[in-house]
Image (cartoon, rainbow, N blue to C red; front, side, top):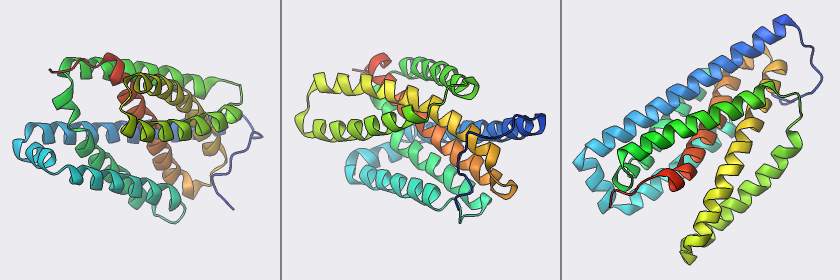
Length: 235
């Protein structure tokens, strides 16, 4: 049986509220530290001519890192019930560090001011939607299924546009990406809240890690899509 099975029928008691709030606090703390790790690694790589020179001269290395990211996400998500809490958390921060390597070239493409501006816009948008997902009484499950299908379509369209090089399609994909990850932020938040109400005590720490990973991915993807609208080129 999946210890993270979601149910809509749980008692709204003070003890349960305290349990849920504790789990959610741990989720946000781990997610924040993950974002901090990503930012520090990205800034370190950007400030190192040797590292940036290596990536610019070896484009295949970036593909290797992206494949490694996918592998880490699969390892954490697929093995969360088998991994110890410490191992799951360590893999999450490793993923955040690898993602920092992958994202470091954005400092060569966009101005630092526009990156900072987009980060704060992302943080405000993410915060508003996460609060909505946490507080709403509406069941967002059906929207989650729609958003997941939209995400699959978004990935396919992005892959197609690698070969088409259509600027119009790129703008459409970017706009759709913003909408998808805005919705996923609310849905994931509600899902984590529901899961924290029914997860056994021994699974709470692992739940906090998988929840942090989900919201981290929502934040990063929302940031990247918004950057296409608010980012100013260094050229």
